[in-house]
Length: 165
Image 1 (cartoon, rainbow, N blue to C red):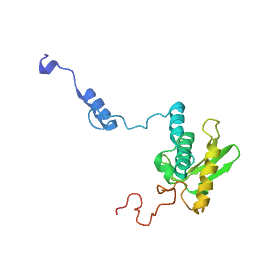
Image 2: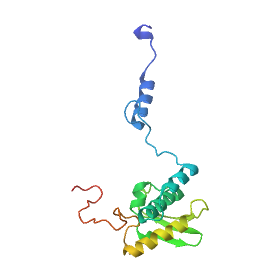
Image 3: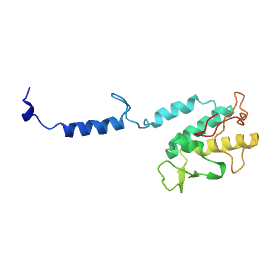
Image 4: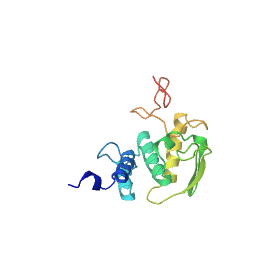
């Protein structure tokens, strides 16, 4: 134990601890970052989707698109049909309000199809489902809530994001 007047100044260490606590959820918490999703793990997730059902088609497309363009969940849920164009070898996606865009101008991305993800085929399958359900209008969301039977869920009582019931 050193005498008080000979001890080193602890302010630098306390400052670094303060920064660490800001990045972590409480003492011993995890850093707030998305977990890295590798292609082998994504392919295992895609194999779990039953693409013979509307729900499986939607989920497989959402997984492939989220990986292909590194979308966050919020960005996926905000996509409208008019923000997406399917061409033979890629998707053209305009993210209207990305989290990192402070001026909210959005950005357009060209997402190349990959043989293992089959993004274009999955997009076509999901848009065909939306057309059968009558939910393919340009101002309609791309990803919809479905009932267990694969029909559109009644959303008349749903709250808007950030709103209360």
